[in-house]
Image (cartoon, rainbow over all chains, first blue to last red; front, side, top):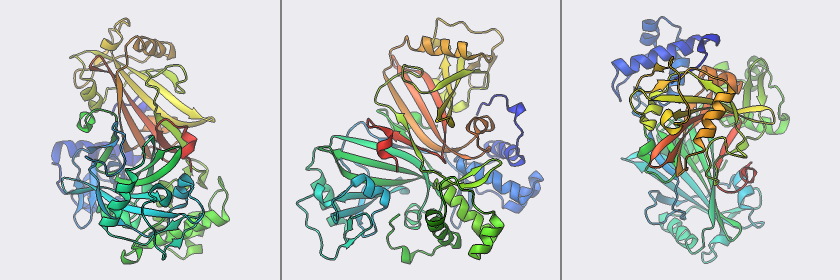
Length: 258
Length: 258
């Protein structure tokens, strides 16, 4: 990457090492290749293990390296473009929606989601779990929260527990039930979507779904689906930050792939 | 945050500590308050320094803590919404554009930008540096790349150096020159924008502009501005990942603020 006035900025030692390592990755290693262990690398570049580890962490943040469970540190392929802000305004589960519906879950509705949904006190909230894979690789995990008021044809469950904030989490169900929620959601007119993207760390369940360690950096995309002036559903989708670049716009995602 | 089937997932020690610390932040600390030092915290929670540090890193990724130069670790305020995907399709520097134009720089044009711009061999590329602040706080740093073909009324400079990939980087200039580039850009018809969002680490110059340490996690937003079937400009904007959540959509950003 081009930089300006770098000569006036004091560079931390790991920063210089990062550049050296990055060049080595370009010239000596192939995508998917496993890096030598930290001790050997530190010896080769004449740095302390701590310095090496900082440089490796930087390269992981930048998507150059991947740490894989049970494998080690490998040279990452270029990040793949994953379309998020689609110009086809559509409900989750619409035709051509690449997400796979896994089932419904019974977890608490997070306080931030309750604030967005503003459910009636005690109103039941369906929680649908979905997954996105590309070429068999896990890309993202989603929890879609749908208040019962959005899908009035569905009936709740008497074993539902009231969650903090006044929402009621329904017991877990299978993929058939989750698809019923999505199908009922499609009866509504979708007026618009709003999204936020922020950095997060993978919760244990998402980490497992994404084949990452808990706490791995993820991009959290929160989408509010609007219908008839109210929030009809909220999606919280967790994308692998190491392998994904999120794409927004009309063009094919691969146009902006590096 | 709600989770499912957590009982079946082995939790790393720092993960449990993170939850405990998060609760302590809620109950005992105010926004902006400085945390005790690592040694004291480790002693209080009966964990090793390394475990504590991992938990603190998680909380920083999640935006709960901020590490500030010369201050220490403080309790972070809720992240602020920063509008990115504006429905008003407009060129950079349009009326109501909150970015501040700082000047033009002479750095190399990164290879990824050259690929998007596809400039004619040796074509000059203007690089405009801009900054976004909110309430006096640095939020984002941007480099806007404009090939000379997009602003034909401007004349280049004979001292320009050819950058890798066939593009030519022009020497640095002041804010007046940068504004000239933006003004000329506005003569074009803007046909559309495409964006990608990905995780990155702050380069030294961006880190300084953002008041962060080099290598701090950032959200990198790459925008391709399209006009008459070609890429008229490319923006690479680096947002602080600790304090920002990027918002996309028509509604006011604060609607999705937590």
